[in-house]
Image 1: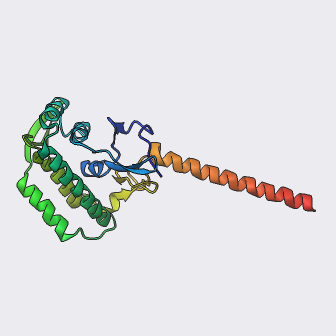
Image 2: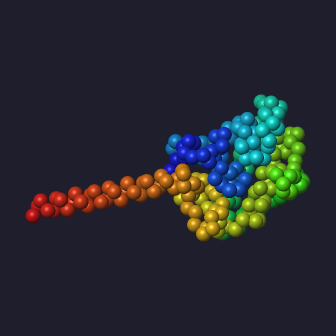
Image 3: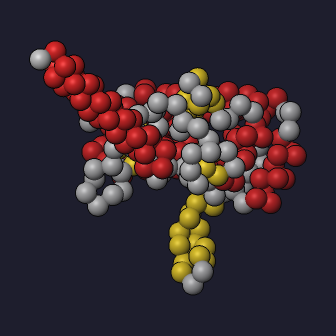
Length: 221
C-alpha cells in the first residue's frame, strides 16, 4: 500500500517519523509514494533537512552546513555512500526482525565506521534534567557517520528482534513500543485506518452479494 505524505502529522518537513528509533527513521527515508519507490534523500540539502527534522542537528547548524556543503563533490560522494549503507542496513534489519544473525560483513563495516567516526558523549541540560547525549562537531560530510553508526549499533545490540516489525501494509519498519507489543502498522493514521476501511468495504460488498443471492433465490422460487 503506498503512503501519501499528507496522511498524518507524523511527517516533519517532508520526512516520516514513525520508527521510534533514529536508525529506523533513517531506513524509512526510502518509501513507496503514489505507487512508486521514492527516495526522500535525493540530494545533500534533503539529507541536512532530515538531520534537522530528526533532531540530530539544530536548525541554525543545518542551515550553515547546507551553505557550506552545497554542490561540493565531497558531500555528493558521501551521500552516495550513505544511501548504499542504508540498503545494506535494510537487509540487516530484515534479518534481525526474523531472529537471524546479522552478516559478519555488515558488522565489520559498522565496526569500521564506529572506529573511524567515534561519538563523544556529553552531559546536556534538557529543561531541569541532565542527560548524556552524543556530541560531535561536523566539519566534513563524513562526520555524519558518527550519529548514524551509533544509532545502528544501538538498534542491533539493544533492541529485541521481537519488537522490530515491518508494517503489514507498506515497506516501513518500526520499533514496537506498545505495552502489549501488538502493533501491526507503521501508523494507525496512515496504514491502520486504510486497512480498516478496506476491510469494512470488503465486508460490506460480501454482505451485499449475499443479500443479492438471497433475492435471486427467492425470486426463482
